[in-house]
Amino acid sequence: MGTADGETSLKMVESFINFLQKNSPGISINVVYADQPKNDFNGLVQTVLGLGHFPSYLEKTKNVYPLFSANSFYKQILPDNTLDFGFSATAMHWLSNKPCDISHHVHMVGAEGEEYLCFAEQGKKDWETILLNRARELRSGGQLILLNFCCDENGKYLGNTTGVNMFTNFAQIWQDFMAQGRIGPEEYRRMTLPQYYNTVEEFSAPFKKTESPVYCA
Image (cartoon, rainbow, N blue to C red):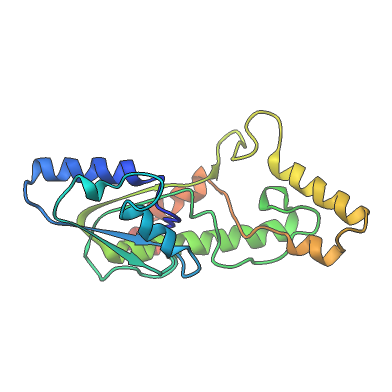
C-alpha cells in the first residue's frame, strides 16, 4: 500500500516469495500493488515486470502473479478475508484530506492550539479508517506490517533528529518568500502539508482501548 514506483520493495517481496515457496513448494502467489489513482502506474508496472532500472523477482520465480489496484488505503482494496500478508512503509502519514491550513508553519509539527487539534483529530480518524479496512481484508491468522513516520517519546521525528528541524527550515524559507513579496499570505497558508505524525500512544491506542472499533474488529 502506498507502493509508488515499487522499487524500494522489490528485494523484500522477492525474499518473502522465496521464503513461502521454500516452505510450500508449488504455491501460487498474488502480489497486489496498491496506490492512489494519481500514482504513476506505468512506472510501477515497468518496475515490477523488470523493465525499469532494477531486475525483477519475476525473472527468478514462478507461479507469482502481480496485480495493480488504484485504490487508496483509505478504502477497502481487497475482498473480505483474502489478505494473508500486508505491508506498507512511510506512506500513512499522508492524511485523507487537509483539516485546515496552519497559520505560521507548513507542517503539523509546528501547529498550535485549535490548528493542532484539527490535525490530531483527522489523524485519529484516518488511522482508524486504515485499520478497519485492513481488518476486513485480513484472513484469520494474516499479518500486517506498517512502518510509519511518527513522533517518538523524546519528540523526535523525520526531519528533527539531530538538532536541525527540516520543517521549521521549510517554514522559514516560505516566510522569507512572503516577506520578499514572492508569494502572498494565501499561498503561504496553502503550503500546509496534509500530513500527521502520530505519537506512539496514538498509534497503539486502537489496539489497546477495548471500546475502539479496531479492537473489536
